[in-house]
Amino acid sequence: MKKLLFLLVFLMVVSCAEKVVEEPDNLIPKEKMVDILHDLAILNATKTTIGAKLDESGIDIMEFLYKKYQIDSTQFSESDLYYASLPLEYQTIYTEVETRLDKRQKAMEEATEKKNDSIRKANEKRSDSIRSTKTPKDSIIPEP
Image 1: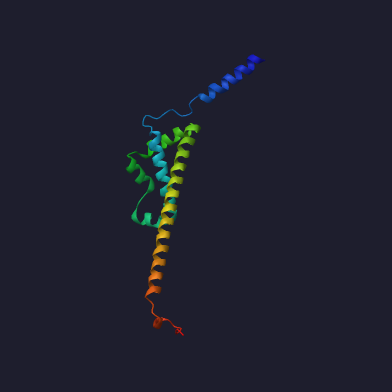
Image 2: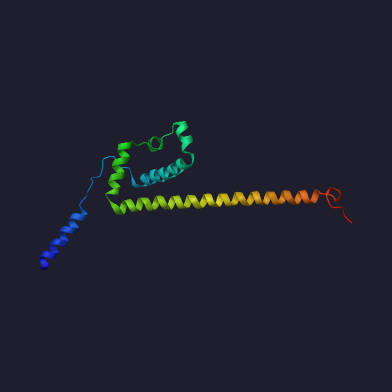
């Protein structure tokens, strides 16, 4: 019985280690894949807000990425399929993409906050300078 159990465990380990998809000859390196997927996420988010502008200008997101990263659709598809066949590797790629997107979001939030603070301070300064230039005759209520 122990031999049968050992054989079953051994077969499961060997079958799980078997590659489902062979590595393509033109595999996109992992870091470049992270860059591509990061840009793809940003461009897809942009498309939801200004999709009409992209359509008007004739910009196709995937064609833009292929040109930027000097790849073609087949190379991207094969690389994506290969990484998807390796769940831990694929998860690592998407975790890195998510980390980059989070950093970018924080940076944008900080920049927006800084801009809003700057505008608020400028408005306060302007209000203070307007108040300081008013003379009693400028006010509606006469001074006693």
